Image (cartoon, rainbow over all chains, first blue to last red; front, side, top):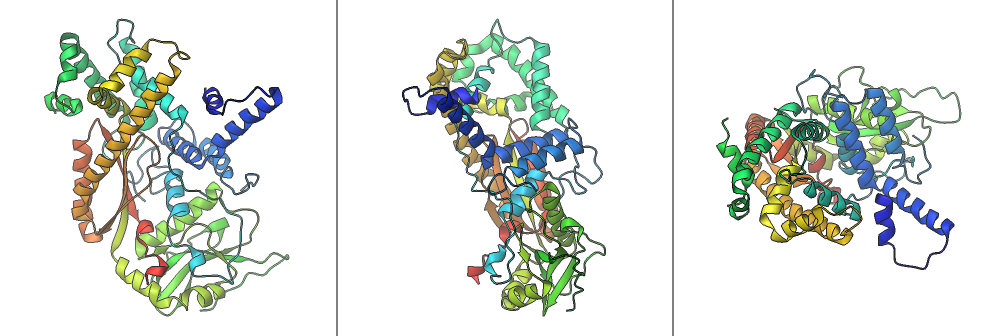
Length: 79
Length: 147
Length: 258
């Protein structure tokens, strides 16, 4: 759903082939994934899920560490 | 920090309440920056960073709100049945209303359902009139409800 | 100001994590642990002291544990004394360097800031919209939104794509207007019980308000009561959340303001 809307906002260009398209999709997905606002929103959702008892503290911790690792400068770092 | 009374059940993730997202907002974004005081002896350790988090609405955001608005109309002939409606309300309440200082999540959901039921009766009788009425329908509803 | 240095067993030296600055006569609760389990202690200089702990650096700082450790220390200290909180990740070579480079040259500045913030704590009030309620408001208030809702409602998802975007855009704009109005209303209701007010960046579209308040300890009950009343009057439309008492993260003076 997000990918389709993302594609439609790209400047219209002649189709450049599957590889080009796949790379654009990957970029868009990554951009959203590493976007600080999105990460922050996901952190909030994890808090709420934990507070509501939907996930355990261990599960929350795992999700949170994964989310936080997206915020390390250079992306590849692991806490 | 305190959000709920100490020892309150599952909503107190930490001894003093609050969630990791709150912590992130505070200590990554606020407080004194050490660089303003220390130069020579500063140790450059790799840190998580949080860029300026200005909310930029995206196409996805617009579509989400459009969908939420379209789901609002409950009084179509083909609309949701009440059991589904209650389910959605409860889930929505649980997802969004995890923390409240003085009210439980289920209370909030129940009141929303009550509002919907009250509205449904009114609307069946005077649908067109509603759009022309005074603003702030929520206040009107609450005014009419017994407390 | 003697500091016990850890015996280094390898080439990596321990470094000094700094959490905040407190009055020198502040007492720390014993056994307080900080980043990577290091024992928290004070580095004193004149009338002020830095709250620090030592650890062996290994990899980036920013895990869940690192963040919670930092906030845990500041919270614990803020319960007992005035603290000027530092931003996450302040690492200095040694405790001696903390004293020499940070405390000595800026001693009077720290002392004054601590004095100004004594007996005061931060509270953060966050409001979140009950989506259904405000969406109904927007529908009632804006004929164009009504029109688009009706025209796009029954069409399959792919059709009327741009109409849906337009609909969403109008709603987001309307919510922005409501957020401004509700933030002002919140500040107006609570400011009489606060010494300072600092609006914060809204986190997402459902945010109705996000404001930090500096509240004197003597005004705290009145402030909390007012929040409770606001919560009741906004019932069904905005959910309120209160965080605090916190160290004055939003109210520390900027160094150039000396």
